[in-house]
Amino acid sequence: MASEKKSKSLLGRLVKLALAVAIITFVIRLLPWTDTVSWTGAEGKEFTVAGKLDGDWNSDSIAFVIEPKASALSAGFPAWVRAASAGEEKLELTREGGIVNVASGASDPIAQVTETTWDPGMFTVFSSADPKYIAMAMGLFFLALLFAVTRWWRLLRVVGCETTWFNVMRLTYLGLFFNLVMPGLTGGDVAKAIIVVREHPERRGQALMSVIVDRVIGLMTLATLALVVVLIVGGSFAPLQLPLIGFAAAGFGGSIVYFNQTVRRAVRFDKWIAKLPLGDKLKTLDEAAHVFFSHPVELGIAMLLSLGNHAGAILAVWALGLSFGVPAVEVNALDYFAIVPIANIISSIPVLPGGWGFGELAYLKLFELIGASGAQGTAVSITFRLCQLLLSLMGGLFLLAPGAQVKLDDLEAEIAEAEKVGA
Image 1 (spheres, rainbow, N blue to C red):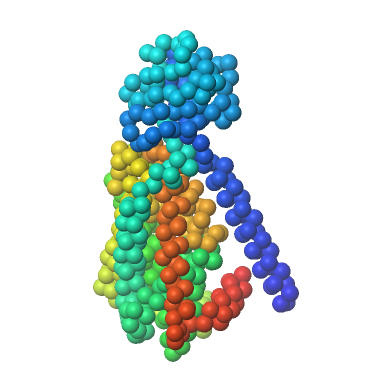
Image 2 (cartoon, rainbow, N blue to C red):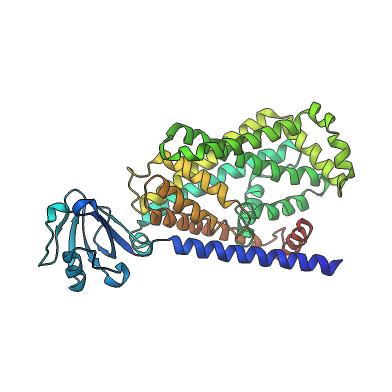
């Protein structure tokens, strides 16, 4: 029996690993690694060439060197393009005037070149990052964390798990630290749950339920925020309205049904729980959930704190966008209040630690959905992960502090055991 469980656990990990590799490979293949220039020539024909942008690519004019191998130029390209690429001459580009200077011997009238656009590749985007905005983002991420810490601290007090605000900060940072090696943005919740249960052995069910309720409130507030903004903005975000409505309706509808005593009696909910494995523990969790439901004011405060938490994180991502020169005409501040919640929900899928892979794909597609650069969106996402990584590493300091209540080896063993039970 033990060997069978071990085999299933190993198989599950191998499947997750294969899926993770597939996701990362897919995202890497989608990313634009080289700079490109596109324009419309004679008779409305569209051309795109790859190369290297020279100068500030956010300005209204720039120079560009075509790379023939990357562009795979064919006979269908104008003669002046082939001449410029062969001589490695720089094209002078402007957004309004098109290509204003090309290699000598150009045979096409310049007046026929219109609607010139250029897009940076990943290397160009990262090389242009402004560190002061990244520092601003780190400050906003930390501010957002303080809202989350306060929310969980208040929820613990609701169920009688009295502790200090600083201790909740410690537990939160430990959860962030273990999120580095556990799948999804919510992976660290397993570590938080184990730690808080160990610190409140007399109220194990209540302590565990505080972690679950904390996550559910945060997630539902995130979905509601995204839905409201998407409904207000509309436009390119319109295709996302129906999925978000369905997600929010399922969450709030499920909660209403779960706490409705008439429905519970009709389906004999309590009897079903008693028959399930670990029925006594599930009953304790169920009772703890009803304690939270009987404190609507505290739940309302928790949702307000969640809004503060999400607003801080969204503004931090907006600052990262500024660091990479994301044009406000393409992605404004309100757009981020739709993009970031949706991307974070997608990143919660438990495949890769920290939500890597899914998050980058989400930012790439969401930026492209509203007509912005997918490379910039991915750069924002990757830097967002790196900022979170830096914050998470700070959690390791609590494990090294003198008199720390949590031993790393013991905690890792308990987490591994929890994963086996879940499998």
